[in-house]
Image (tube, rainbow over all chains, first blue to last red):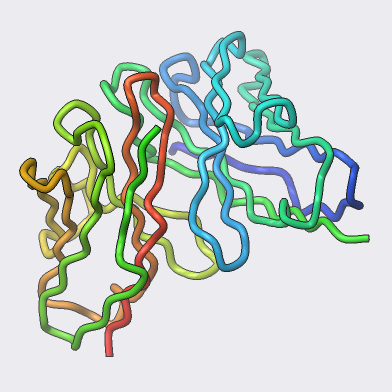
Length: 121
Length: 111
């Protein structure tokens, strides 16, 4: 069965970086892009960016340009999202979600379980 | 870029029908489709409608979607409301460069 399993919760200090992983299994990895979203307390879902299955093409939301890096390892079918220069407003649950590369528009059919990142001094 | 605007909250009684709207500020849902996700507290989102009006397997036919080109809006309708439908609902679309956007979310209360 399709599974996206994310790394565990993290607590970081302001200014630090966090790297969240998303291990994919149960499907043909090369047929799906991976997107990253977050849900901050009291806020709505926010799209951060997309990485292709080969891990060599990314598009980031303008808000996160310069602070986010998405990478992938096809050998382990794992995607990563690293966010730097953390501030308190980055406290959120971060999600990965897959999207069929053949879909005309992004549709997220499977999501990871979410990773809570807390930024606190 | 564009925006997706949803009502902050809606409420309705069990057994009734509720409709949640999602208005796109520019571009069109005809060119870039719309999806709807349900999110319960502490859980990841799940898809209830994709490509305007398609239901994933396992989603009851009480859930339906539509678009109105004249108002550039999409709607999610839930009929025969159940208490288990109480959740946050998000619309989602994209632009021609596959940049994704979510609406602000609508909290559905079934009381």
